[in-house]
Length: 201
Ligand SMILES: [Zn+2]
Image (tube, rainbow, N blue to C red; front, top):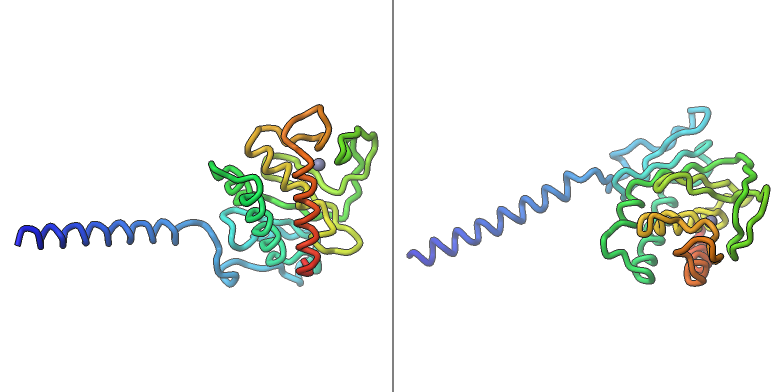
């Protein structure tokens, strides 16, 4: 009898823990269902800040509703993270955390900056395709063909991931001034963008 009571008690404890576990998952601030969060409003003029589904506090700013649907951005972020884990790993989930807090601003503005090419050459007044402004805020220039794969998003996400891991985003890419970025990262970007283009994203 004692062992039956003990067994019941253990089963009850396990069930209780799994219930607690479930409630933690469902209480997280992740929008799994698009209908829970407002989408871009075509009636509104000017830029709108739209929540990206599937991530905790991820947002994008779009100039209008014709560019970069939140679904395509969400898929691009998911593909990026999946491939990042396979290739570079994320043992402390720092990259995961950064992506869950990302703010992406899509913009038609032209910006000219003092910055480095992918092979590490310093250029004055270079036309920016993207900028990593803080560890979780990126600015992305909208190209003539408005597909995510034609933008600098994946490139900037590599800076975000390096910043999350090293506190250094490696501004000169494959150059020797800063550390973190290797030829593997440049290839990673090319492959990811090729896949996104193939998916019409
Ligand atoms: Zn860069």
